[in-house]
Length: 152
Image (cartoon, rainbow, N blue to C red; front, side, top):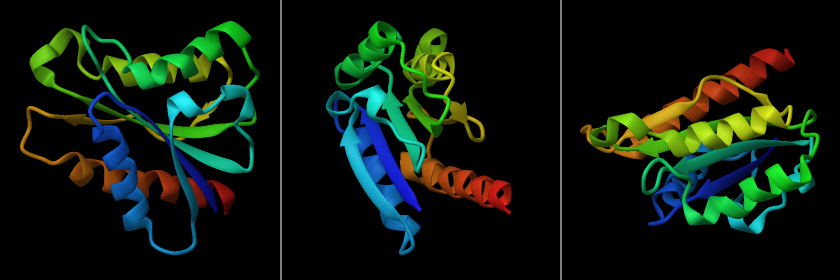
């Protein structure tokens, strides 16, 4: 199975989460990891499953590396009905009003382009005691189990 991890980050945490999930998956997956800033949404294909991992920055915004991707979604309005994805957000509940809002924004934009989301949005709270990978890895395995059940 082809899996493409796409991250939006200011400090590198989202990229590290992608790397941690990839390392835990083991053999049987053809994985790539890229920054959202390096990907054109119209180039997403239907043969790949996409894991989006993004933080929230500032006052509930997407990080700078995710902005070009979202701007292209808004400007080009591509039909992503062939795309399947899951999304994981990093945030801090100290900022309750905008907690993990970056991943919510990205999720809404993908859904508006008719991409099909698998499973629930995963969320990590930096105020908690769990490390992001401790939440993200089991969440990703659950997403992949849902995909396997769908295929059966």
